[in-house]
Image (tube, rainbow, N blue to C red; front, top):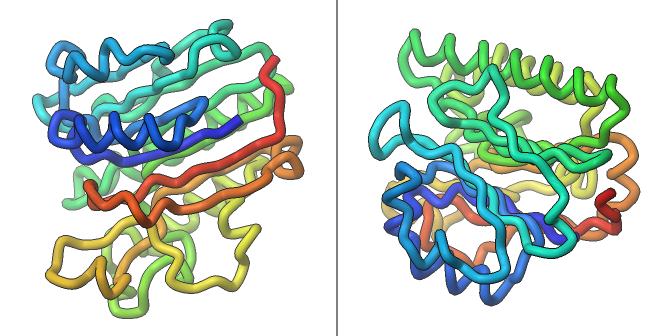
Amino acid sequence: MKIATWNINGIRARRDSLLAWIDEKKPDIIVLEELKAQVETIPEEILSLNGYTKYWNGSTFKKGYSGVGFLLKEGSHSDCRFDIPDFDRENRTGAVHYTNLTVIGTYVPRGDGDAHYAVKLDYLSDLSTYIQGLLQEGRQVIHTGDINVAHTELDVHHSQNKPGAVGLRPEERAAIDRHLAVGLHDIMRERFPDKKDMFTWWPYWKGARERNLGWRIDCFYLSDELVDTAREVSIDLDEKSSDHAPVILELGYSIG
């Protein structure tokens, strides 16, 4: 099973890039964040893409803002249920439930400004509680998406590591600590515990991406049983149409 997460930063702007990328990579599950589109404005070429079932939490909170989507390869992924959890805010969350597995996609709020920062912390708390409930039911969980927190100092280039910056604050990092404490594993960091400069997002400043002055904020978190089935996790640095790179996880796990 190949699963990809990608903050696409506007599905309409990235239509051709997304279609070409899917044709090349052929993931079984694709989780997209920051659609910036209501469902009815998503390009028809994507809505009608052969071979995939699509689920959307489109930008109804605010036009051209937020939104997440799932593309599931038809066949082995036909027996599932899509859900928008009750704690969802601003069209940022989706979950696909199989018999014994839930895949959650999130676009965590950036948190600029005091009011939205409080929304971010509440969202992360509610997300952890939601996942804890799934784990207590005996389900396996894959949580992926744009987390908008650089969890450790290794997850941000030293030039960006500014005390007090949103995405780096102690309470945000503590929220991710709690997230992992419920029973999840940051598979990328566990596979590469000491690796620096392993980034998935770069500012728009001139030369930031070329110089790799970035942050690792697009992640896969796995429950215990899934960790040993992880074959490979990688950042697709060749895809540069968005300000985020896709992250791809390959699992030796059968959905049931």
